[in-house]
Length: 271
Image 1 (spheres, rainbow, N blue to C red):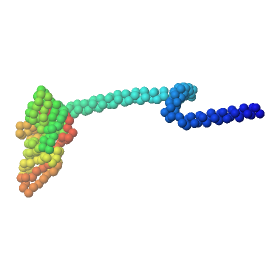
Image 2 (cartoon, helix red, strand yellow; image 1 turned 120 degrees about the horizontal axis):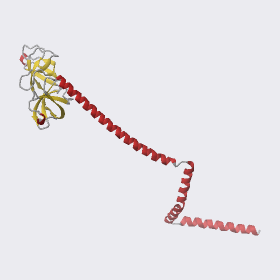
Image 3 (spheres, helix red, strand yellow; image 1 turned 90 degrees about the horizontal axis):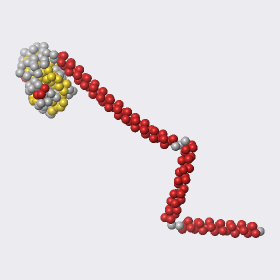
Image 4 (cartoon, rainbow, N blue to C red; image 1 turned 90 degrees about the vertical axis):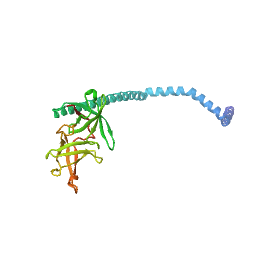
């Protein structure tokens, strides 16, 4: 009976303590509670982290982070190798372009072997609605002078109109101010061809003799008259003959042999 009484008193005491704790935590200040939580976390977290690390170490999970570092290092190495490959590819493309250009120069030299020439690159263009001028990378220091003829692989390009020490301006035959004394290769009739505003690949042939038998497909070349262009340089091909009421006014359209939108290498005829 005494034990039962003692157990009952202990139960009452425990109940009272629990009730007091509930009242205490219910009325405690939130800020103080946060302080208690922070203090608890400060004491418990290192232990918890240590246990987590020990668990990962035992189970092998720590290799995940090592793998990430290895992947980062490998990725950086691959980026460096890719950059080196791109650089090598650019250098190869440059060498390939230079080799192509040298072949073009050799081909031009062989084709126009009867002339003394200086090779040049097109380095700039001064193009508007009315003018078609290119700038080349040779000038007075290289022996270039005004009125020298400029040619390309397919035929006539134009003539030098001004020079500096290391560059020259070339008025192309498609410039609206350009006129070239020409000959129809089949009939040997003389005509004048000039640039047009309408089309950068077409010249207008005028002053066609009334008795000239000019037909589509005829080749047009320089006549050698006028004091600038040597005789026999190919200009283009007759692509259309336009007849008018007055035969004196008839004209033809000449498609240029040179593609002036893609021209890169030329020769300047010095003699």
